[in-house]
Image (tube, rainbow, N blue to C red; front, top):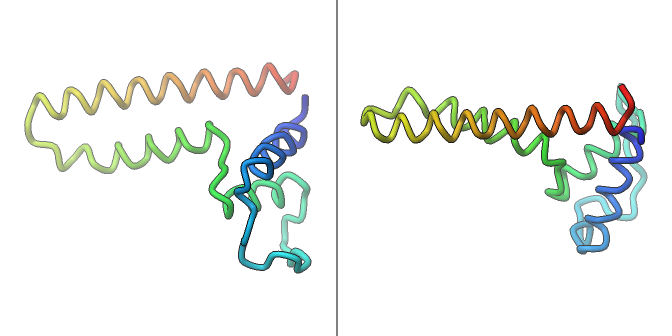
Length: 105
């Protein structure tokens, strides 16, 4: 299945959960953007509705945890954060591999 089909699935799921109700600009045409591909538009809509794919959520969690590491001075807290970071990175790798296999890449 292509990424656009995956995006369509996520959009339908978010729509069924009511996540698109009362969005800013509802009922108005989408503005022209440099990247007007269906995938880009779909991901923008999903992001505005707070319905991001798991892969993007994991990337954000990894980024946030990586930024907080320098502030951790307690060795036990730092070790726990590094363990969590390794787990998140492994989960991201699994998600990326699943997407590649799903798309037939």
